Image 1 (cartoon, rainbow, N blue to C red):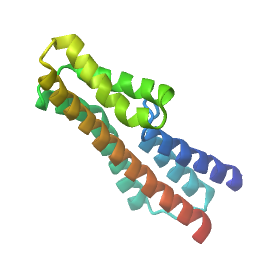
Image 2 (image 1 turned 90 degrees about the vertical axis):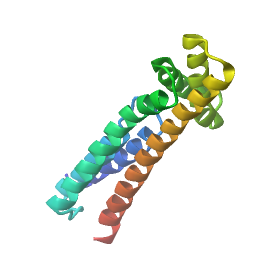
Image 3 (image 1 turned 30 degrees about the horizontal axis):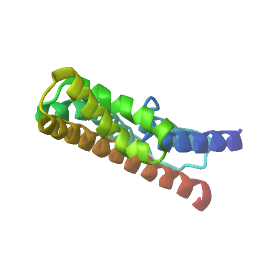
Length: 161
């Protein structure tokens, strides 16, 4: 049973890292489940305090990822259409132009969303697209860092205990 839990934990870590950049997959929560599975397997000698800290980090990073794009779009004068366009651009970019589409898609999507929705000048739409893109990069970066650190602790627990 322990081996099955370790294998499941590793799968959750990998899918959690993918979820750091792919929309629709809750990356940090999946990685956190990997930590829990390792604790249950007996391979992860994580303290309860350690797990509570990572639960808090997971919640903060996940909430930040949902709130940050709207805040940045608003800060840069954008509309909700820019945020939606950013997500649509990400999905389209992943499938149409990997791997660069994952980087350029959110920017192009935010720009298109803002231009279509508000018909602002190209310069203003570019500023909004940049702000929305910046939020995507910061949110994805935070999720990627959190997922990578949880993976590090998981690997350390699996192989160094």
